[in-house]
Image 1 (cartoon, rainbow, N blue to C red):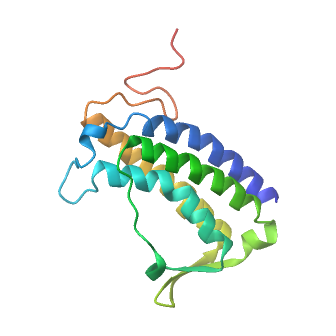
Image 2: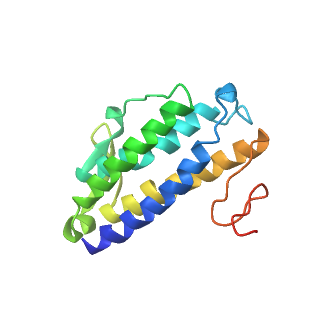
Length: 166
């Protein structure tokens, strides 16, 4: 369990920051997007809120086939925050069930039964759960900036807030 203990601790720390970003979401701009190729704010926020729960559940199996993916969306900030909190709780529980041997076991991403990507389960958790999640949270913080919403501190002060200032 040593591998997952460190990841769970990091997940819980990052979740606090993610929640601060999600709490700033402006419901009145739910369909806004900065570019025609970009996701709308609400869709991106839902994605950020659900990544930990989704990928931690996928990690419990030996593979996930994309044809089984069911797209769901959140209608507003309150739903996104609820999904974030539920996903975090599920992720902590799911990751807590993965011992070191299982963490080092292979996991595959499939399309119609054909492997698209195979990697150690811990690489799925680090890359697709943690790094992918943090990346999209960063994109979401840019959306907030472009909408002139105060960006909370993430890894240090933001241009809007400095938790270290007196």
